Length: 391
Image (tube, rainbow, N blue to C red; front, side, top):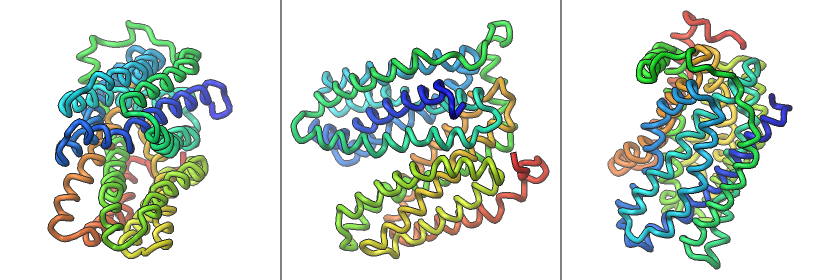
């Protein structure tokens, strides 16, 4: 499917909506919230609350896409991306902004598990490679979106930019509406919907590869989001130029983009577990180097973090698709996405509280040790489930 038009249509749609979504997240959203009078505490909640939508909804949306089809939910998700931004112009209070962010988060809660499940159904023999290429779209959005929003803020107010975000997102309907349904489904294949949800989630909970993948992704995002939240403050305190701190995150995403297809190929060629272990070692090394790096040396850990993501994420997703029954792929991707979002929330909140007591550097060293321990233990419970074999 990597060479098919459908794959690139899906990738193009994801790039469009992710770019637009990131435009509305950084730096636009904090500026908008502050202009509405949000306190620091409320501002932090507003910025992170959209993640909670995915934490709650992803498993259920995955099940519904198993039942009703991927294409339908891709259309629904795209409509959320298109319609919700137009309501930001009506927001007058921080509380209203909080509510609209919860609703806007539904869009990514849909796209996350459904796009992965679509690829898994269309290319079952090369999932990791396909997801490696598909990761270009998401990472590209993280780079293009904030830069475009920052440029527009020079001449437009936040409400006007959110209108532009809705218009940009509408372009994704063109490739999405041309996507075929990867698998034909008939209603008699499934039990009543509530029974199917219970059965699908129960199947996922009994899948070792799902818990492994979800747990690893949660741990990775705890580390990544802790750095994302607190490196700017630490860097300024240490006298590091703010432009260099910005370059750290840009280079991290750029390296992830450049090495994503290679990371997927590596997992496909040498085995998912080998790719995950290699990525975890690179991540631990990058995390250790962050607090010890000064000035330009800070760019080395950013490269390691980018390579780590490219190695880990395609293979963790592929592990789930290899183990879970095909009729429950969407549910499996949703459960992994839920755990991924949990890591994004836990990292800044829990590690932030610990940083307040022991400091930034000890927390990063602790995270690196935990990652190394995970690498050492990774294979032990898996041999019985024959997950160490090359796919």
